Amino acid sequence: MLAIRIAIYQLESLSWVTNGGRLLIIEGNMQDGAMVLAGMDGTTSGEGRLVRGICKPVDGGVRETAFTSTDGGKTWKP
Image (cartoon, rainbow, N blue to C red):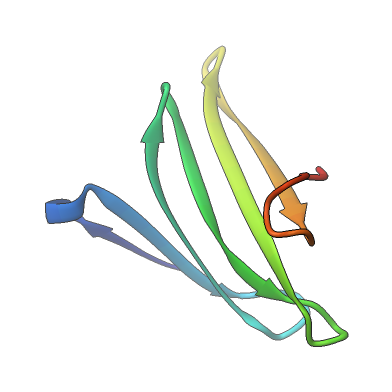
């Protein structure tokens, strides 16, 4: 995984290769005390899929939750 912080835009960018062999780049920033990162991921059928990850601090740790959307962000599934 490659993590880049772009200070002038207060933007975080994470890049890595998924378990399906695809490059995934998600970007975001802090929102309401949580790091929210989002981007586009390819599916096996070649269609695009939005992905969103939310990392929140909880009791000495971090809770990480991932969501996907195949309808342009109208609905999200964990």
